[in-house]
Length: 119
Image 1 (cartoon, one colour):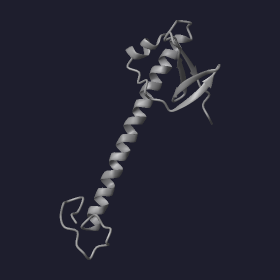
Image 2 (cartoon, helix red, strand yellow):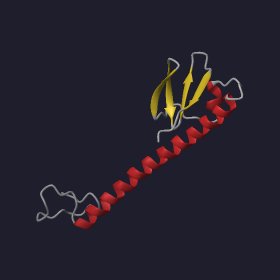
Image 3 (spheres, rainbow, N blue to C red):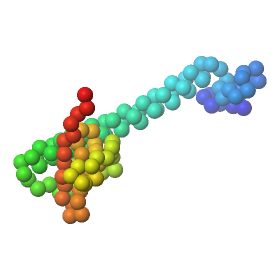
Image 4 (cartoon, rainbow, N blue to C red):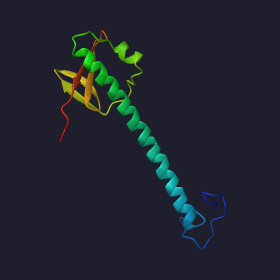
């Protein structure tokens, strides 16, 4: 069997299930997997923060009684596929992103609610 880190031969004196030729290569591979996993989570958190900031900005505009449409979020680069939870507000099922929930009706009218932060 070949080492998954360097491609060298895994010696028969290593454990039967070993995928690496030495402990150092096993550690290096584990560290690389951890780094990749952290990178994925980090970029997801950054996207959540970015979309939450867009909702916050539009929420402030909405508080001035200005009509907001779904295309306004699209123009700002909002990621509609992102959601951290779902929330029921005034009988409407809303998507949650961070501390804000939003609902788009059939006419693309947008409603945004600021959620109470949990302490």
